[in-house]
Amino acid sequence: MAAAPTDVRVTRPSADATRERILVAALDLFADVSFEGATTREIAARAGVSQPSLNYHFRSKDDLWRAAVGVLFAELDASMSERIEGLRGVDQVTTAKLVIRDFITFSAAHPQLHRIITQESKGEGQRIDWLVDEHIRPLYELTTAMFRDLAEQGAVPDIPAPFLYYILTGAGPTIFVLAPECRRLAGFDPLSPESVETHADAVIGLLFGPE
Image (tube, rainbow, N blue to C red; front, side, top):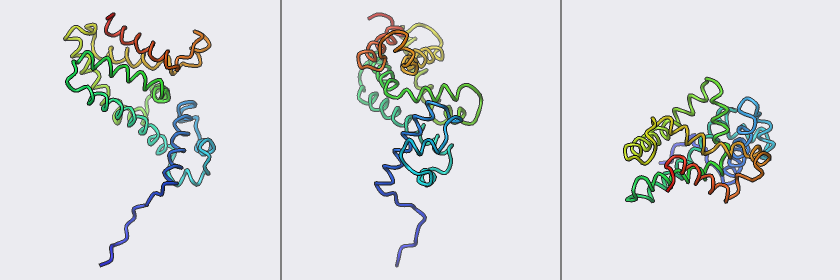
C-alpha cells in the first residue's frame, strides 16, 4: 500500500545554512537596535538573503526573534549542563565556581543575550513574559537554589539568594555588554581571553571571598 502524503517539509542542507545565516544576523541586529528597531528587511540584507527567503523560513518578525533567542539559550543550557555533568562527584563549592566561570566565559562570547534581556526588561510586555517563562526562570531557580545551599555552608555571604543571583548576572555580563565603553574608559579590551579570565576571577572572588 502506498504511503499517504504528508505535510512535512523536507529541509535541504542549503536551506539549513540559509536559516542559520538569518538567525545569526537577526540575533546581532536585535541585540544592537532592539526588537522594535530591527526590520526583517535589514536582517535579510545582513544575512545576504532575499526577503522572500527570510519569509519562507520565518512567518513573522516575532517568530524570528523567538527562534534567535531560543538558539542562544539552548547553547547556554547545553554548555551549563555539560559542565555540571562533567563535575559529578566534585564538591559543591568547586562546582559552583567552575559553573560561574563558564557562565562568564559564555557571556563574553555572547553579549547579545544580556543586551536583549536588558532591552526587553525596560518595560512590560509579551516578549519579556516569554523570556522569563520559557528560558530565564529555570536558570533562576537552579541558581538561587545553588546560592541557598552555598550560604548554608558559609561559602557565600548570607544574603537572600535572589540578590546573589542579580549580583552574578549583573556583575558577570555587564563589562562585556559595555565593551565599547570599557575600551574607551579603561583602555583595555574586556573581550580578550586574558580580560575574561581576570573578570571571572574578580566575580568569583566577589561572591566567595579570597581563596
